[in-house]
Amino acid sequence: MQICRLLIRNFRGIKSGVVNIEGNSVLVGDNNSGKSTIFEAIDLVMGPDRLSKRPVIDEHDFYAGEYIVDGEPVEISIEVTVIDLNDNQLRHFGNYIEW
Image 1 (cartoon, rainbow, N blue to C red):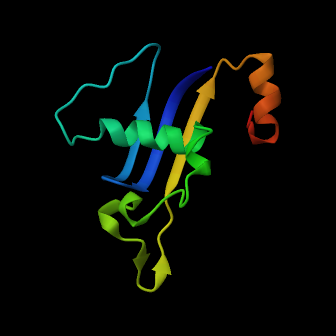
Image 2 (image 1 turned 180 degrees about the vertical axis):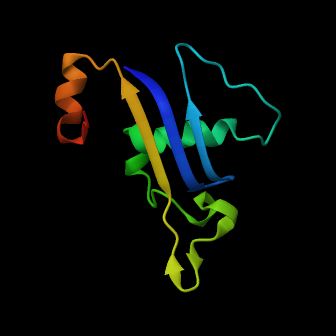
Image 3 (image 1 turned 60 degrees about the vertical axis):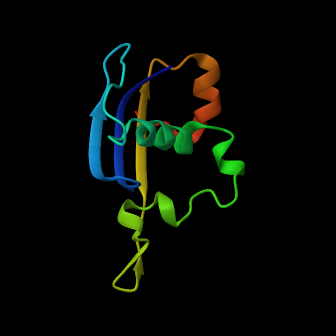
């Protein structure tokens, strides 16, 4: 399995962003530039341990700490696109796969 695309909205320091990944990649940057946020986003979607944490997300996970705007809740959206799944992974992800 290989992550090839990551779409993040309203998560931590990222208002909206897309990361396209080809092959083996390395994230390099200054402190507080978003590297850990990208890995936390991946972990939130694909990490088995993150969902057992309570709460799964808190007010610090929302962009600029805004979880309610004009009386409406703000939605965090994280989409991870993966390719090259093996047979076991295909069975595991089942109905979540889009062709």
